[in-house]
Image 1 (cartoon, helix red, strand yellow):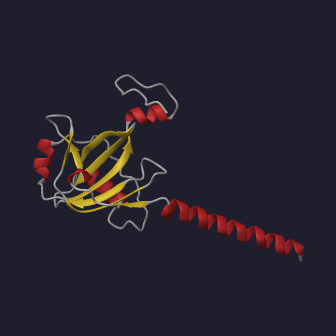
Image 2 (cartoon, one colour):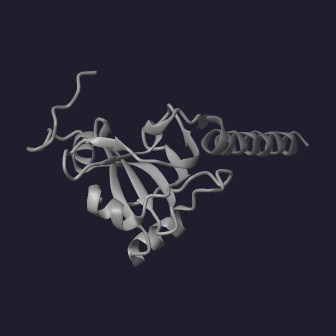
Image 3 (cartoon, rainbow, N blue to C red):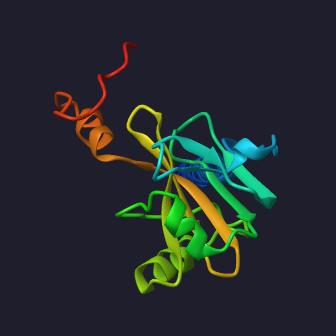
Length: 174
């Protein structure tokens, strides 16, 4: 009888721990990002190399202080895609990261497929927004836009504990 009680307790504790881990990963650490104006969506200009605001609306975003790559955003823009391609820097290797299921507007698989198929175009939003992290913005021809944070080449190396490669900004002091 005591063995059944011990086994039952172990199973109950394991289930509670599993639920807690799920909740913490999917819900607890995310916060809504309130729209703050034109700087919510920025693209890097081909001409100046600086991030500039993109006219947009219907902005929704989430972020987390627990990781620099948990940012996801959705928006709409009226700026034609051809104009964006002529004005802003495209992003060579976009990899949209999966958002929590409850953040309905962001479907990383669909965005990634559209980028691979050439249906959408990825742009450099802001380079090194935080050291080693770029904000990438993808725009569809119908004006739908999505943004996420992605680790850049400098970040990949430095976060693995290797020295800062040539051409990367110096690693910030902790």
